[in-house]
Length: 201
Image (cartoon, rainbow, N blue to C red; front, side, top):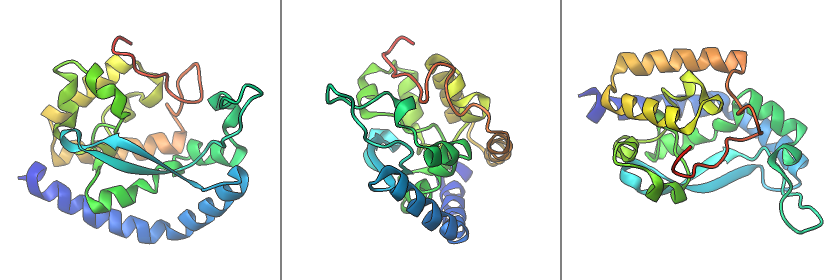
């Protein structure tokens, strides 16, 4: 009952209230990022959601589009602006995803939506992460986020899918708030963002 009905009702209600409460932060962060990036403050990208259906995820854009002499984008760490680093450290870059939750693309809690090109790389068990709506935070995020391997992430995701419950979501939400305060697991040990999944790592 919770998984099929009440989870969606809670997602909608909480996302609506949170968007209203955070609206001043969204406006301020958007203005600062627009100045820092000299561009659109929002990052919009296609991601697979429930049952692999593609949707547009909305986040704050924490990196600029500066390119090197070869015409290619500079490494992530070099494109991460000071404002973007703060926004990412405080997890404020995730706030716009409340819009995705409101319209039903995402849930507050669930496996993180990854890139569409990863879909054919998943094994049979890993594909099950799409049996629920993707989340702003999830079991993998409170157990390491970008600091753990892809294999570990998928194991946590699949475990969550099998054990969805109100109490588990409440626990994940509580642990997420704790990690946001401590800024734990924001980046992997080797880069500003997680390395790409290749089907084996």
